Image (cartoon, rainbow, N blue to C red; front, side, top):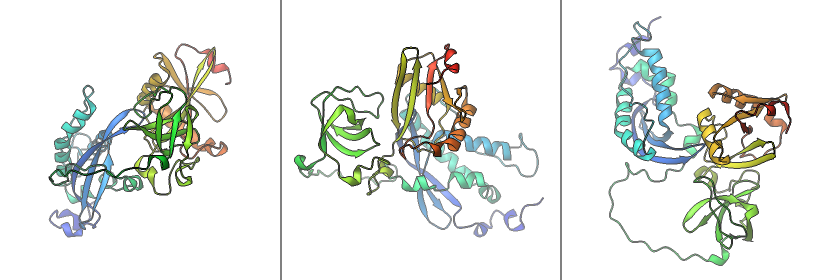
Length: 355
């Protein structure tokens, strides 16, 4: 099989479609509080037709792209005509401050994308590269927070904050102490007044307390002035003004099965419902939620049997099976269709009991 004649000459750039990416520059990094806390890169992409748009990518997506390209185009993996010299991707870092690691990767990843987009035109047309730089629906809904690296230097101007009518602001008073687990949750003391931002789901609210924003269970507070209806959609937790695109929470129900009973928790993360977390991320999250180290992760299959999760492939199977049974169970629209059942690693008796 031969390459199309018009693509053999790399100088024939005009033959490429207008939506082919030609430059990509990291504009900023953003912290995300998902199943683990991670940083993603905000990338400004310019296409051949001069259109510009933003995409959001994690380092692991760069790594997956590079692995796939190596399998397809490196001389070692596939000797032959369709090979090229791929740029070098900075390696994984397993220790250190995550923000500092992300910041230090910016120059290397910018250089990687620059060299990647200078590869022969027949490589640029590969779906692997086109899909990596494609602006997905999720990318288009994001609201960039800063874009420090694209913003020109400006003179600091003192601004005066407008006065807020506190009596008309939706708010609630804490009636019990609540100790938040993780960075997403607000810790409350009885008597605290929380200014409400929106409803996350039927049981959780998002609000601000002492300049910190987070989520908390409604059962721990007394509502003084409720949210307007547009911000109180119990099913979706999204306002009509599109707040969900700016701060999107999805909730996971999980259970700790113990001889003395079942501990049920709902945890909320900044992840899309379509996300498929890694086994290690889920394990780390459940250890933090239940404060138990020696645990095993499980799920219920369509027949109701308890299945132990051992690796990423089992997570994939759990997510796939939840799509088959999810329509039979009514859940809030921002709740994951799958649930985790956590057991003590050495307790095998749970596999013969129903909860």
